[in-house]
Image 1 (cartoon, helix red, strand yellow):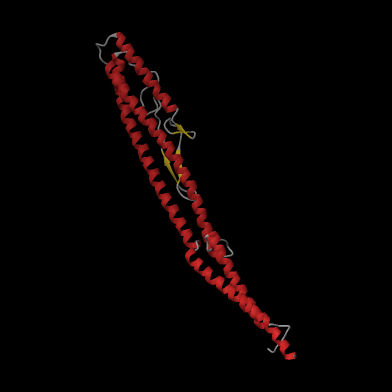
Image 2 (cartoon, helix red, strand yellow; image 1 turned 90 degrees about the vertical axis):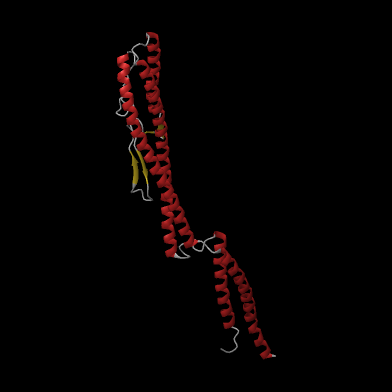
Length: 274
């Protein structure tokens, strides 16, 4: 092309180069601001879609953690109640064995029986109040369940126990007493069987609590691994971005200089008319 005051090819080329550099500079600045190399679908649609799906998995696992925590707390309360009932049964056995002595005087038997009745009724109080978040796992009515995966399709269920008087585990009745040696002897048998049954319930609840803890640890590790994976996909290498930013800023300055030089070219045409 000859000399022209209407079209400046050099300036257009310099402007395109400067625009490209400015666009790259804008990307680098956005990465520094957000810490992400893929902060929107505009940056990389496929990678952004994968990252969003993984973020959804992490959100689901956060809900799983909450569910497992609630179930663990429910089991912890049930275990505390079961251990308390176990301690009461041991005390009841002591009272019943003492009352089975045929040579015991009436006043002593009456005092022991009163203690027995108070301890017996305390079992009911403990069982009725062993609730967490509205769930009672020791009165035979509550259900312990927790979701275990991000979409909620799998769960862990732990069988609840019935530690109520005459509930099947605890064989002592709501009216049982040790007011006579015969009744006391019968109570000893019931209490020993109750202790054996309760040990089975404690084992079941303890195993369930351990299972929940193992699942919680796994979910924590899985969530952490997914978050690391998301970071590998979308996080920016800020050291590299910082170095690139310096280079782009220099290129931008040079581009501005090149554009200024190109814009001065048409003025040389004036020398032809002197």
